[in-house]
Length: 159
Image (cartoon, rainbow, N blue to C red; front, side, top):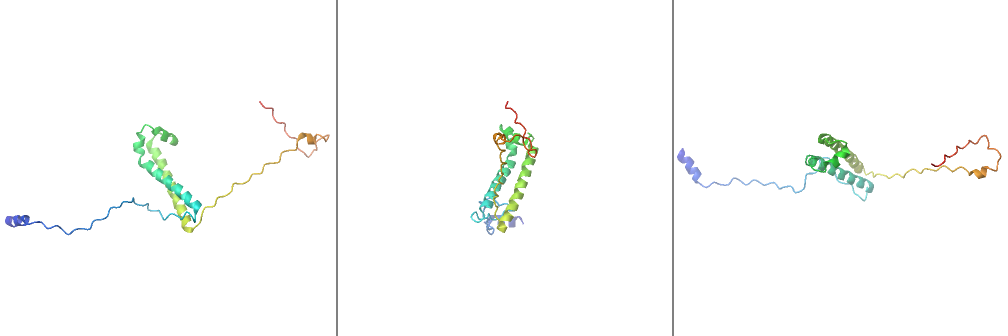
């Protein structure tokens, strides 16, 4: 038995069948909920807003990943001041909530893009200024003001 094992070991080992190697991915994995970006020429307003939301998501995810290292950095108080606390757990909860809200907005905007509906910019409402009261000289010609016209309060003297 020992002789058989020695003879097996002395024979050159044959290499096992070569397994196909998997190619390494060079690109980072894509998010699960992403779809194709809408064409900027067809939906220009929506494409701009989606791009802004994606930038916010990227920044928020980066901030959440590096919060522990940033908490030890000397300039952390500048970040913490915006959250109203210096506790990293509370700040991380705020960041994660923001990421979830931005992801939900991104999902809604991508559904809108899939339907082919662009965002419409609304024009701000035009406010009409009230017409100024006629000057006092024009009403001075009448002896007494009409009872229907309300008395205008006198303007306070400048201080």
